[in-house]
Length: 121
Image (cartoon, rainbow, N blue to C red; front, side):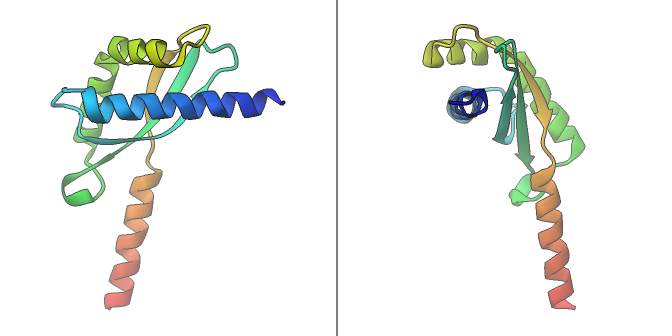
């Protein structure tokens, strides 16, 4: 069993736990409609980079201000989210979480909008 496969499982498990915690338990008004798109955990489990996308009003791309607010809200919930990980996953070490904005969803939404414009013209 390669280390890579195991890390993917850890990443996926962390993504699941954080996604659920953010959606169901986080009551921070700054945190908008967030999807945890990916997690990359360092091999020593010290750090996990959590990629999130944020939808704007009506399901379109979010504005930079909303993204910043959401990331700030997630960062301030760091201790809570680490606690959820520790409780659910029982890893030998609970990684420090870093939140990054994942703009692939925004890019996809923009491409869709452009394609619709082309079809309509």
